[in-house]
Each structure stands twice: as structure tokens, then as C-alpha cells.
Amino acid sequence: MRPPVPRLVDSVAPPPPHPKLRHRRILLKLSGEALCGSDGGFGIDQDVMKATAQELSEVYALGVQVGIVVGGGNIFRGLKGASAGMDRAQSDYMGMLATVINSLALQDALEKVDVPTRVQTAIEIRQMAEPYIRRRAVRHLEKGRFVIFAAGTGNPYFSTDTAAALRAMEIHAECLLKATKVEGVYDRDPAKHADATMISRMTFDRFISERIKVMDSTAATLCRDNNLSIRVFKLTTPGNIKRAVFGEPIGTTVEG
Image (cartoon, rainbow, N blue to C red):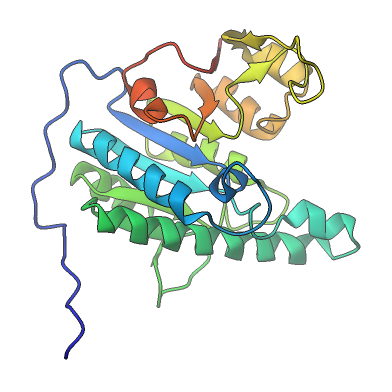
């Protein structure tokens, strides 16, 4: 018996945008650690991946144009390798490859729920993905395809948060959505302090000066200088991505 031929989903016209959308084009930054599930650890939790893809398919049905950057911390973190004595550039390149693994896994999950998807990499791996070309990425978005930007910026010493901010500028996204393991930004570490309070809105200057660890200062500075707001929220809360594109008050908004 022959294996089934993969079905292409690109031939279907993209859905029209929902009239009440707050953000028509977004850049979604997915934390690699969040793909591990609630237990953390290592690798990809298939239940989390399927749930994320299903939620993104609902966002696709709203007519939202979505660019995605996925971290690689669930497989390998460049900073961790460097702290263990590895050459920083070498360990960062390994981290880039980890993001490619996550991106291909996410592409597979999205296409299984009929979301047309392209993976573009900042380092060339032509057998598996397209090289990153800004104008081609924008054209994919205009045609209703999700675009996953893998391998960071292609340069060591830059995080995937910075890659997300950079790609958001390049595709003219209206907002950078940071989906992570926490509900938002807190006034103190909620894992250590039971009375920690989540901050619903804060300025870029406060975010940078207080060294909020949910996103690095380079990415935050880039967003501040280009007037791009950031929304931080929990990935595994059902419906959060959809709430974010409608502009509902979830998580923490960083702006101004």
C-alpha cells in the first residue's frame, strides 16, 4: 500500500480579515521553553504543540497575517553552552539549529490543521527551508501564509527575542506578541513571592531599566526606538493568542 500523498493547503484562498481585529499583521514570539509544557525540561511536548497549532488555526481563520519566531531553549541555549566553557559563537550557532528543529515541528503541526506555512532561515538550509528574503516573506503573508523565521538573525551574540523584534520591523508588524511561560510581567518573581502582582501596562524605559528578564534589553530597545508595542502573555492559556489580536486586556503591554 502506497503512503498517502501530502495535501497542499496553499491552493485555498485566505480568509478575509475579521472586522473587529485590533492587529491585522503580527509577529508572534514563541518561547522554546514553553513548548516543553508545564513540566519544563527538554524537548517538545506534542500536546502543547498540537494545542498551539490549533489555536493558531483559529487566528488564521480570522484573517490575521502571522510571522512567527520560535526560540530553541527547549533543545539548546547558546548562553548556557558558553557558560559551560564553549566558544560563545559556536554555542550560538548550535542554538540557531535548535530553533530550526522547533520551526519545522511547528510547520508540520500547522499544516496538519490546514494552515499554509513557510519556514525561512537566516542561515541557508535549502533542503529543508527557504532562505530568509524579506520581500518574499511579506509576499507569503499577503497570500495568507504563516511565515516562521528560524535561526535567529543568523549572527551569534543576538537572541531570538532580538530576531523577533528585527523581523517584526522588517515585515511591518503592528505588534510583537511574546508568548511565554508566565502570565505577564510581575513586580517581583512570582515563583519566589506569593504576593507578586502582575503589571498590566509599563513603559519601555521601565522595562529596560529594571532588566525585565522576559525579553532582553536589545530587543526591547529596538521596539522602543521604532515605536512597536510588545504584549507579554502565557502561551498555554487557551484562547490567549486570539484575545491578543483582538486587543483584549491580557498579560502585560509594553509601550511608550
